[in-house]
Length: 120
Image 1 (tube, one colour):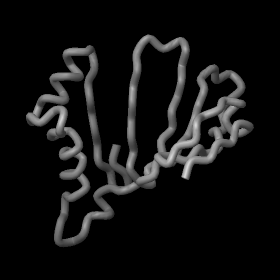
Image 2 (tube, helix red, strand yellow; image 1 turned 90 degrees about the horizontal axis):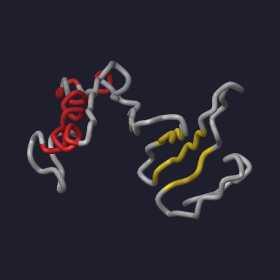
Image 3 (tube, helix red, strand yellow; image 1 turned 120 degrees about the vertical axis):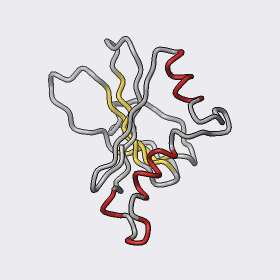
Image 4 (tube, one colour; image 1 turned 90 degrees about the vertical axis):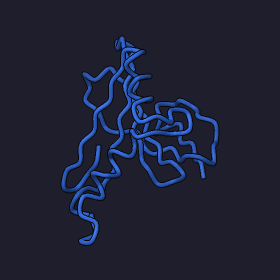
């Protein structure tokens, strides 16, 4: 599934991977010093990676193109529920607040929101 277009990625090679497809580099302003790379994961999620050599911290964000307007009538609030489930627990952080505690212990934090057409 992976395809590497070095011209579309500023000449940077990425090894082929079955887990993602490299997408064209986003258009940016001439004054923007950051490097961008967009990928489509094998599960269909599109991500944009931003490298800022001047940044002193690291961040990650995800937006899903589904929000409250996509809830089935019989399951009002489903998108908002799913937003909360993302932070509830996982194999590595099974407790309700384990992931938030891990982030806080390392100077991080998390936040999320659900609008009519997207969940971030």
